[in-house]
Length: 85
Image (cartoon, rainbow, N blue to C red; front, side, top):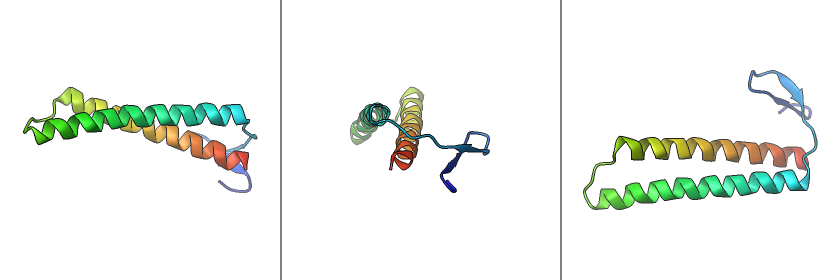
């Protein structure tokens, strides 16, 4: 971020707009939901590993996708909070 501007997905600067409270609340809810999905995946992997089971490719893929979504939701929320205050 530079002088109130953010970079878009192509790396070009775009003017940040003020975020509404409702938009921030929605992003926070998305972040919390993504966190719960990721936590569910990691808990399953931990429990299975304690029992000596190897993770399946589907379990690993699910965790990876959940982490990606969590990271994206976190970035979106933090960007919105930066623009709100």
